[in-house]
Amino acid sequence: MKSNHIVMKLAIVSTVSAVLAFTASDAFAAGSHGGGHGHSGASPIGKAGKAADVSRTINVKMHDNYYEPKQFNVKGGETIRFVIKNAGQFVHEFNIGTKDMHKAHDKEMMMMVEHGALEPDRINHDKMKMDMGRGMTMEHNDPNSVLLEPGKSAEIIWTFPKKVSTEMEFACNVPGHYDSGMVGPVNFPKSAY
Ligand SMILES: [Cu+2]
Image 1 (cartoon, rainbow, N blue to C red):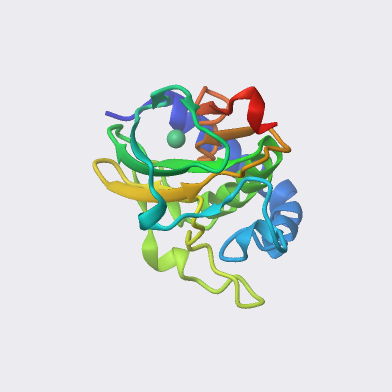
Image 2 (tube, rainbow, N blue to C red; image 1 turned 60 degrees about the vertical axis):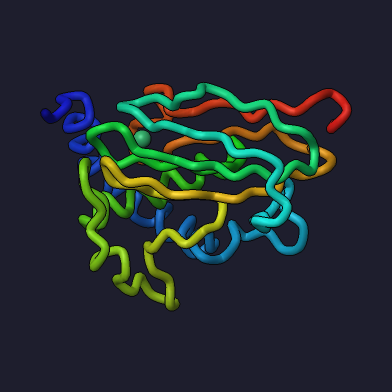
């Protein structure tokens, strides 16, 4: 069953693609993919965690287009294992970041759609590997995110910062999904700020 909503969003994406091409490649060159989101040193959102440090597991289900649960409470410095399942009929992403990071990533996702690497219900892995220039590809190897086809599952182990300096949220940056509600807050206790 195709959602007209999604098809419409994708049509809009391709219409504006020419306008965005320059911006998108700029954002891309900034190195979100495989480049650790352009942060040198300590990232304000935390870092990839080690299995030995995991204190608990949070199961996340991705639907069309919302998450279950809708938010998480974590402690400063806590390492969580996220077990993520795409229970929807479309490709979805689970990405831990800030509002700004999601905004930047959204442009890259649009480029993936333009290049045919991302279809509504499947990921074209061959096109993901395509060289975009300067040795960059569209492959998603970032430790803070997974992009999943319908029915697929994955795990992320993430260590949250001890002291929080920025608001954090998890979101899906498949074009149109963030705006239709695929975003939720990561809540920290007051002591973490
Ligand atoms: Cu999504």
